[in-house]
Length: 316
Image (tube, rainbow, N blue to C red; front, side, top):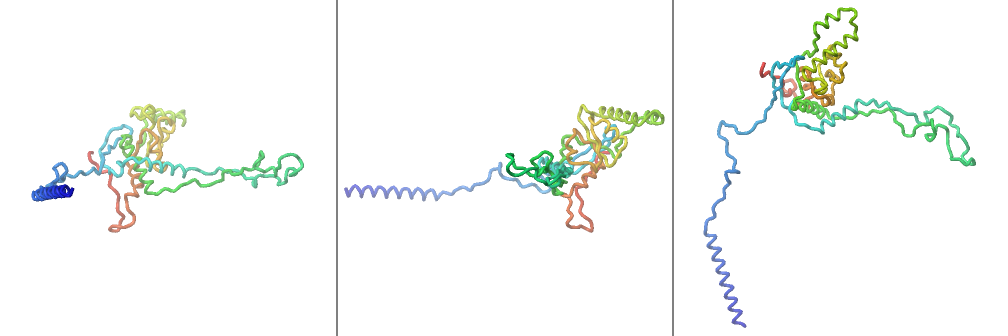
């Protein structure tokens, strides 16, 4: 038995020496260095050649004539004004904020202490076989006060100004990308035909007939430009009140409506099928709602820094 154990030990030692010799032979060979493949290796750009992608900073905007709908010129507007990504959450916050601030909150009801009447207990507490009851002003009786009725209060909510301004430009950008933002030249007014001026000189031509004529003329203009009822309602935005345009659009509410910049909200920019706006009105809205782009903390050379520039003429 001892000879068998010794022989097994000798065989194990020989195997161990053979394994160590193989490891020494393997380590004697030089391991080649690993290098990155051409598919993953980033090349070094040549001097004077820029290969990095730079997104555009401006978008083209066509300025049309009104009401002829003829292109007049092509301008470049900043992407931070008319090419922002769609943010439904910000638009929702702005619309809810505007709706809350327009609520009157004048609903009011009277409590039992504000109802006119006696405080006398109607009948005895016990002995009648009926349920106990107080005075006739109790909320449980008809004509009594209301327990937890509404009282005048303010429903207004607060929203960060930068978020609200971003919602304005997001709504304009959404309209621009869909091709539903039509920018017209300044002084957008509905010109009336020569026949209208002749009819105004007649005594039989009343104000009601004048409004009917304006409405019919505006309906024909909108249908010719494909802005009418069949193509969806249109929203006309100007810097101030325009008599012919506003009066005519008010007579045909199914075709659209006309607003000035003072009565405009974010919700108005999202409701109708298209926005027809003056260039000066669009410029006014952007300058008014870009607080997140212009810093008011520091002063450079005695003046506040300006935001991105828009309105540069490309083609006249």
